[in-house]
Length: 248
Length: 281
Image 1 (cartoon, rainbow over the protein chains, first blue to last red):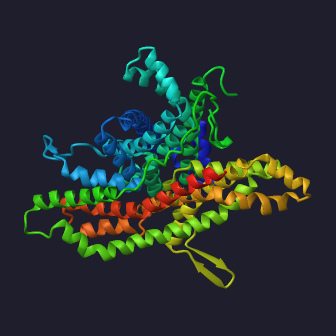
Image 2 (tube, rainbow over the protein chains, first blue to last red; image 1 turned 60 degrees about the horizontal axis):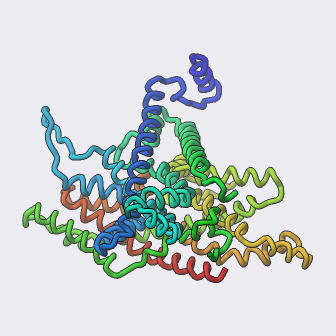
């Protein structure tokens, strides 16, 4: 691996292109930790947002008007306000109102850290979209299929879990795919509340090493790669969930 | 079972058509009232915590409202300009994706995918740091202040999205249109400009407005690179009022409310147009 560092050091000396992350151990460690944080943020928020979507879509068909109303307000608000404002609102607004404790040396320990707030707001943001996506998928399941399941003695929850959800999931996967890619891109907003994710790490590196252009290229390449991996996984999943005998 | 337009059906014959995700959401007065109530609630909770010696959050919001709203207007200006620039760039890019020349098509595709899949904040940084602050044309110097750079930064993702919208709309037209035009001896260019694109316009309008709504909400990102738009001003107002923590929720809640009031009617209209064109086609 030494030759990579040598090569980039040489590149800097000959052309002035300064890719510090390839030869400076400190920068490299910071950048890799940033990528790790981005992956952590996106994986956790993807999982939570899918759970929110499934439960929300289930509640949206509830008999009780109040529950339907609450879900609807939630979706309307989170779909029509900027995610950055949501993050600020959660972190600075709610974070300040929630109780906080003090540790041994007297420093204030907030109820939730900035990373946790980032996960909360990203999950809620993507979850609001997921609710609508799952709802469109559920509406694509014919009434007769549900009736057939009921006739076979499934309970209401059983019908939802074993019949409606698998069919709906298959239908809404492309839309879900889009939303999850969008979520991965939105994780960069955590930069605003100083979560050390990839963009934040890059900004620190280019502030120290004065190599904005080079870092910017690396940064874009990293995100294209991350999105590429996510899209590949989702396509594999789409193929795995294909119902045999139908479609192409 | 009756199936709808080709674009809307699933590939599973047993399933019903997918309903577009938005139509269920309809603005009722109480949505706005609920949000407004939430802001008031936060304000009053926060007000109760401070005691009566300091100005109440509602008074603070009213006092700074002209400044905050001017910041919001700047957000709208950013969104309109970047939308215009992005659309201008995106239309040819979308048409290039439909070209019969393979290399041109591949280049346009890669270009679009790149700008579509990069995070918007990263693209904004990209524009802020890499676009020079002035251009020199011989004697003439064209200055590039920060906000123009931000417009460029926002226009890049808009461009990619508009390109996708154009491609999608052209491909959603029945192939018979092309054949009919060909049999009437239209050239490919004439077919595109006189037959295909006019029909595409109405299909492109709803997704285009969606993109506009999203870009409007994204203009607050400009606060991260230090442009004086609403969120930056909100933070400054908060500082000017002595950084009281109880003011944060009402102030940011007010920002949320402004964006909601502006974006929701656009969203609503988009949904209505979508439904109308869906019936027609």
